[in-house]
Image 1: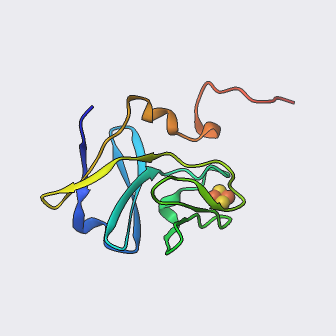
Image 2: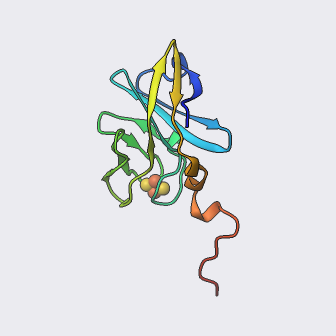
Amino acid sequence: MDYQRVARSGQVPDGVVRRFFVGEVEIAVARWAGRVYAMSNYCTHLDCLLSSGHATEDGLLCSCHGSVFDYATGDPITPPATRPIRTYPVTEEDGQILVLLPPDATNDRPRRRQTGVTGATS
Ligand code: FES
């Protein structure tokens, strides 16, 4: 496993969250107080895109229903979300943001949007 280039550092200014793709994996990259964070782009409440939310002092805010997630651990700080989002190791080098994605990162897609996942039927 190697770190993969995601973006130029300037693409994620302080106080901003943006969406990026690393192959088929969709991630949110946020910066707060100068530090960059990478995480799954899907809220664990109802799968809203976290890149449509906001970077705040408390953590990454989902704009759909107000859940806030800790940048570093992905733990939900504010409900309604109760499950953590997945976070990824991230570093910056030579003006580039690099993320280390585990081999199973493609499984982080929202369950409701995955094909082949069966749920309750009427
Ligand atoms: S989908 Fe994020 S708080 Fe509901």
